[in-house]
Image (tube, rainbow, N blue to C red; front, side, top):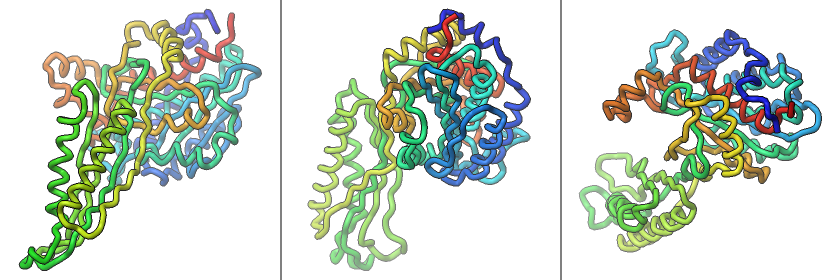
Length: 411
């Protein structure tokens, strides 16, 4: 492991800022939804032609891996996601998307930063040894992309990494590198519940078994799980995100559908809550007198994202060395990610950190006035737009520092 200070290593090569900015603005202006990222896929492949690497694509639809080999040594994988969201942009920048699709989660920063890391690693081979893998992943927003790449043979198609890295822009002072051990993002699932009933004319409710009434009882009881069955010291969310029943004004429908979204920092708490959901759903359907049984379908699964403590300690020391007071400790977030699917498939430890992206004056004012939740645009909002310069610099440099923590030559 190197004893050369990370800030000195970062100074050994200067990335072409104009090239990186142009790519970012192109990607921001041309967002594509999950599993439809064909132009983005082609543009990333074009950018990778600049480097001496082996490109393996497609993997899992539009996924790409770029493998930089440089002699014997550790193997480090860094992942960036590149799909967008069905959000109409309201940032007002001259490179804003105009199609009703938007990079409202910062994946354009993630991708531009990882290409910047590729550029750095390709031009500084005298300072490192081993293998660096840049993995560009589709369909993070739908929790499909990582699994699709694994199912398409990822584990057998690239060198086996020793560690995996990833990062995400989040609200916070632009340029801060925020990391922590243990749980960083919550585990999540969506749950589709189909509630049986008996249809009848709206004027004859006595002939029906009304699934909308059953659904209402289920919704009411679901709200009591977190408040009355989960220890207040634990974290759990049970959200009824969608309710649907019927299609006309005078017919009691034959079934109703609920879609839930649930999040946890503990698999033990998750198991308890899911057992409670199933108990409540089946009991309320039985109480309604319905002849059929409810169906409960889990989908859009996200594993608990929990950072390896030993890897965190190793990389955090280098973050502190490189970034000084802008290397800070992250708070756990209630959002979710499919990133853990990749290191889990390889059976290796991982570290996933956050990059602050809010203009510093906006953030500091909102914190001082206790208005962060009101005044700071967050991921998935139409006005979400990272402050480019400090955010891309921190994201690129953090990717370089993490990789060099394992790959840098001892000098």
